[in-house]
Length: 115
Length: 113
Image (cartoon, rainbow over all chains, first blue to last red):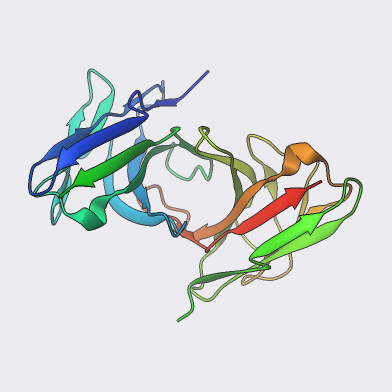
């Protein structure tokens, strides 16, 4: 069964506007971690932000924030004040359990920022 | 620090040939991983190593073998390459705790003809 679902294959946003990239997940483990990675056209994977299942507050890292809705099992990435350099593939990922090494990734969303 | 390095960057094989992808990290991480990335499917875990001397299967291990040579190095071997193994291969490393992100290498683009 698919554990991570990203329903938006592609998204467009105007420069300087905010954009939300959707991610839903499926797990029965009460302890899990959610990650977002960025993959620019050059191919490298860049870590953006982390949210733990027990974290009380939504994670924020600069222009990135995570809209974590535990009951809905969603962990949407919000990018504020989009820049041209934000154009890339974005992947949501989940790691279940406290010491589990198995990280599952979604299929990704391609974000294009328009000037 | 170089982070995670992978060799080679590109490789073309014929069906049935074998090869080893090399990965090394200089961050003193215990855990290392091999993923493959196919178009439209995100990354899928092939094998991982929680610590030196241990390896475990991930989501798609068939057709691959791995060796955790020491704490720094984790290699992936294709014994008899098949066209279905055409993909981009990423190595990653991390600490084992849940909140630790994985650091990725630059990837190896493998084509099997």
